[in-house]
Amino acid sequence: MDQLYGILIDYWPFWVGLAVFTAIMMLLRMYAVPPPMPYYKRKSLVTKSELRFFKALQKAVLDEWEIFAMVRIADLIQVQKGNPQGRKWLNKILAKHIDFVLCDPMSLEPVLAIELDDASHQRADRIERDEFVNDAMEAADLPLLRIPVEDGYSAREVKDLIDEILG
Image (cartoon, rainbow, N blue to C red; front, side, top):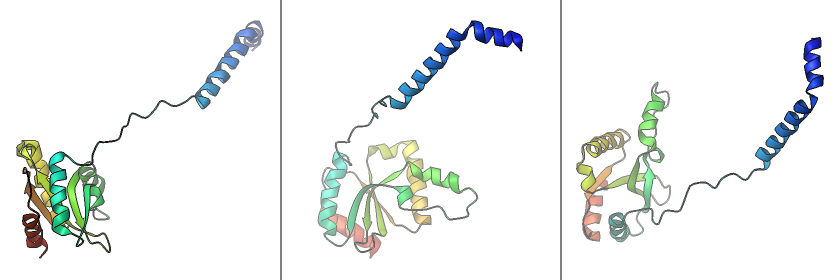
């Protein structure tokens, strides 16, 4: 004990310096300006192909339905409460989205999900993803309309496809 006391007395300038240094570092950390977040605004919510379709979709549905673009699947469907693997099933839908969703204008209840399928949907990983999404939407009783990407869209043809599914 006397030896420890001697070390403290003999090296008191070091201990005071260490305490001051620590206090300064803590203050600097408290008042330091955090680095800027690495985000920037997207130029558009949708691709050019999706925008062409969106314009036709607007004409097709007029005021009958509300249209939402790029909606997370987890915001459209939910995992049944009490499912022992609920987190696993939720993780499968958290990072996926649907291109467009038609909703009831009064309640905003989703009534139809719409996916535009471009050439990427021919890849094995996309085929597997699409099959999962098809099955998930069917299980949740939310109709899903898949439309191939085209250079242009007829509002009448889009309306007919929607009416065919929704009746």
